[in-house]
Amino acid sequence: MTENYKRLIGGIAVGAIVGIAAGYGVARLVEGRGLRVEGKPTDVKSAWDAYVVAQRNYMAAVKAEKAISGQPSAFRGQKTTAASSQPSTFSGQRTSVSGPKAGQWLSFDEAAAEFGLVDQGTESTKVFVYRNKGNQLLRISDVISSCGCTVVQPSPKELPPGGVGRLSVTFKSGSFSGPIHKTITVRSNDPAAPSLVLGVNADVRTLFKLEPKVVAMGEIERGRVGVQELVIKPVVPEAFGIQRITTTHPELKAEFVGGPRNTPNARKTEGEIKVAVSLDANNKNYGPFTYAARVYLTRSQSGSAKPLELTIPVTGTIAGPLRVKPEAVFFGSVKQGERFKPQKVMLSSRSGKPVEVRSVDTGFPGLKALVKPVKPGLEYEVELTDDTPPPAGFFQRTMKITTSESNVPIEVRLSGVVMKTQVAAVR
Image (cartoon, rainbow, N blue to C red; front, side, top):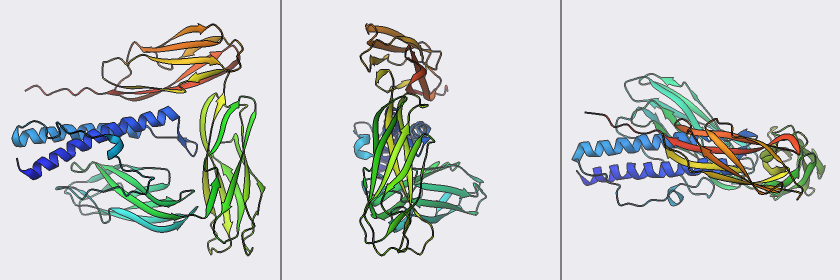
C-alpha cells in the first residue's frame, strides 16, 4: 500500500472518530442545557445523523483498506480528541472545506460564501451554483446550517447529469460581532460525497453594545412575572430609533421604556435605548426555557428602508415546588439490545415545606422510575432504570412529576443514543 493510500485511509478513519465524538457531544450539550433557538427546539436529530454518517464512513474506510492490502486499520494507535479537532464556528477560525473527490457527482463552483464586511442587524444573500458531474440523477435530500443565521433553499433538488442548480444562502448578522464562520452541510445521493460541507464567512461591524448580551431571568416562581432590563448602546455616530419589538413566545413581552423611538432625521444618537423584558409564568410549565426578543431599529444614515434586526436570547427557569437536579438526563449511548446505566434525579422542597410526590411518568413504558424518600416530604431520590431499551436511534422523552402542590407537572428531559448493531455478512 502506497504512502498516499495510508494517509487517505488514516484521515478518513480519524474523521469518523471525531464525527462520533462530536455527535455525542452536541446531543449531550443540547439536551443537557435545554437549548432552543428563537423559540424552536434545536434539531438534536442532526447529532444522531452525524454519528450515522461517521460510522458508515469508518466502516467503508476499513473495508477499502483491507481490500487494498489486508493490513490492520491505519488509525490504530492514534489518539484524537473531539475538543481539539472540531472547528469553532464562533471564535473567528475558518472551517476548512475539503476539495472534490474522485468520482464525485455534486460539484459547487465555490467552496464558501464570502459576505465580507456587514453591519449588525442586517441580512445579505449569496447564491451557490452547483452542478451534477455524474452520469445519474442527483438528488439533494437535505441542507443543514450550523446555526439559525442562514436560510438555505436548493433549486432544483433533483438534477440530471450535466444540470445546473442554485442554492440561496441568506446570512443574518443579528447581534453577532467580529469574524463569523459558519458551515452548511448538503446531503445527497452522491456515493462519493453523501455529505458535503460549504463555508459561510462574514465580518460583522459592531453598531451596538448590548447589556446584557443574554437576558437571564433566573428562577421565576410560577404564578409571578419576571422582569429584566435590556440596554442597547450605539457605538457609532449615527441616530437610531426603535421601530418595533417582537418576541418568539406569547408569554414573553418586550417593551420600549426609554431612549429615542423613531428618529430617522436626527443628527446624532441621543443615548441609550432601554427595553423592559418580562415573562408571565402563570401558564408556563415548570423547567428551563430559552426564547428571544427581536428589536427592530431604524438608522438615519442608511438609504435602506429595511430596519436593523437584533435578536437577544432570553433564558431562565420556571421554579416549581420541587428543585430538580439535574434538570435534564442524558443516558449516554449503548449498543442495540444493551441496557442503559441507571440514572438518578434528586428532588428537594424549594420552600422548605413538605411536598408530596404523587406520580412520576417517564414517557416510555420500558423506562421505570422508583421514588425513594430521603427526607420524607422534603427530599426524594428518583432512580431511572430501563427494562426494555428503546429502538436504535436518538431518543427523547419528557418525564412528568406531579406533586401535592400543583396539578401542573414538573418536566425533566430524558435522552440517549442506541447504536444499531453492525451485522457481519456470512460468507
